Image (tube, rainbow, N blue to C red; front, side, top):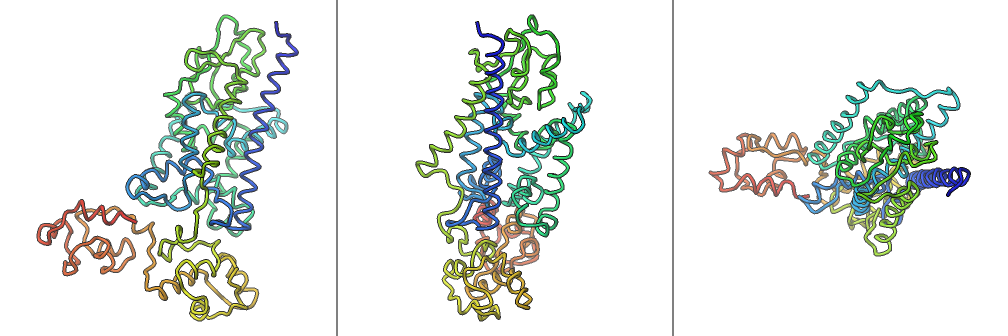
Length: 460
């Protein structure tokens, strides 16, 4: 027989293991976010925070299927992360939410602070809770739809995860480009002082995906009503806000896999047990093994060169398009990437190498030149490169508009920001076509199929 002291000691070790994993991941994410702002990205830099989020694999899925390319800021790492997380959800429940997610850890930390400050946790009324849990599915559908339609990370500026990684960039950037995401982050943490993980329960699109996959999971938590003493400690411990004491079995859909309910159960018998299929497992094995498998997948794929969080070279990013110039790139890298001598770039910019050293990241160019009394807009660098190379700046957020037969060349030109001639070239249709008539009315006359036109337009 295992004595009560050993039993409590074992559960405390599991709790500590979960906290260690959570804080380790949060620390890693924090360090990466700071280094990315200081060093930049690219082959010699540090990964963007987007490359470390499983949701990027979902966001890039359509682009990969239709064009064979990732959308900006996502890489092979995103596919591996979402694949690994999905595997773990199916066999071990939502371990990612309960043990790994940095946003979840931030909410847990705020929650512990709230308990000490206010000595109380609040509950959302059950009827309201059931309705609000559906909101995250609406968010998931909306984000996927607009991301796949535009081919861009539409959630970027609204993402609290992204905002957190830009804190080291300073207030100007947080309250400018990432104002919405930062606002959500602040509201999320304040709410966590009083309630358990409201963002995870009601808003998070990745949580919505895991909840859907969780319906297929073979992992579950079972309650033995005979040995249960109805103390409700499991309800208080549940970070997902579930009524564990009222259920015979808790599936892996809304359960976040923290195992806190089983660890806080005071009965000497196994009133709450974990199972994978028909096989019973301890909360220790379920949590630690599940998290271990997730990190093991990352380590294995990284060791064989599949796990990539940054591109191999600048050319893979630029792809001959001046609009792909990033803020962390230096003038030297831009010049080399487009094969343009730096002397020409400096001449067109109206500055010298003494004013703006070639090793300066573009996003810092305005600050450096302003200190020297020179007004400068870093967007001018892309315009200069476009003029010197004869390439048009193509904003893929605009050019990813959905082509319809009812549109004319003029319509597409206005929506995409491309010239009519460039639109015709991209669509691969005759140059003598009428600019003001719907494409579907011209297809038969000029011998092209709308399906072929749409396919050519969607190619990056």
